[in-house]
Length: 172
Image (tube, rainbow, N blue to C red; front, top):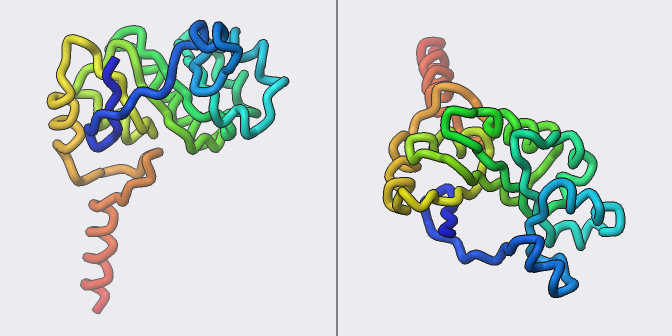
């Protein structure tokens, strides 16, 4: 599995599947599904939670992690198929409403053409599907430098800044 950040750089893979972690009696750097995490979450303090991740599918209710989201180290949202956009909305909710500042990862059936939209919705890393290359995602991530609307990524809205500057110049 190859994971890239929002600049298209390959990340070292420190996260492992929950099943492998439970064999070693340590949940550090493990990604659990919602059911497995629910069985452990109340026993973990904030520091322990920062070393645990959760994988959410479109069938999971993200509200179940709302109280703990800001303490988790990773949230992986799985796209079941490229034409199912529900994880985009979930990502915005997790960032905006739940205060999550950790690694928000996109995995599943993702196309390179969707990379910039992932970033605009708040994703910070992407699992590159095996049929695509890292380079394809890197090119897509750098394709545009101007945004027309504000988004969850908190990036500067260049068009809005240009309009504001034009109004200031006109007022002079």
